[in-house]
Image (cartoon, rainbow, N blue to C red; front, side, top):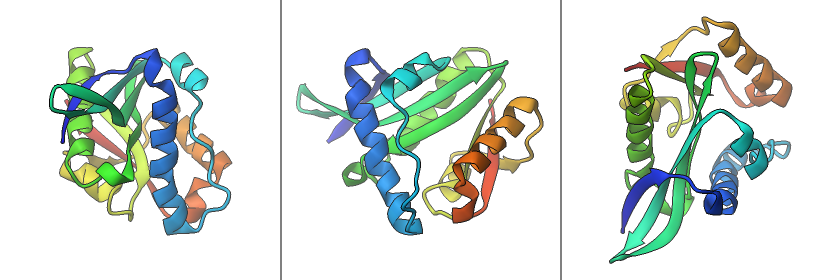
Length: 170
């Protein structure tokens, strides 16, 4: 199987929600988190400024549908990797890395000098993965980034482990 990275289309909305829910199930299982927040709705995601890229599985000459996505917010001059999700059955095949690389390239093309994200420090497919993609742990240095922490606090994400901000220079 190969994966084509492309801009998301409205027809991808339902698949994107399902991909996020399936990927979140890995964290829910790891943490035993019965109160995990639901996936972002397609309407909410579409209303956010920024861009979404999907990894579409291809078999031969035919597209088989999205198997992963990355969502980058562009707010107040910041580029922030809001969500990266890959269907678990397509994990560990380099799709997440290709999505991150494509998001970084598009963010650079749009004129940003850095991209941030927030994640769990000690989950192998979170901070250690992003470090292997060139992200380093940084301190929140803007109201936008401090606002993300407030949102995480409201969602009680910190009860499951240490959360960190990471940044990649472009």
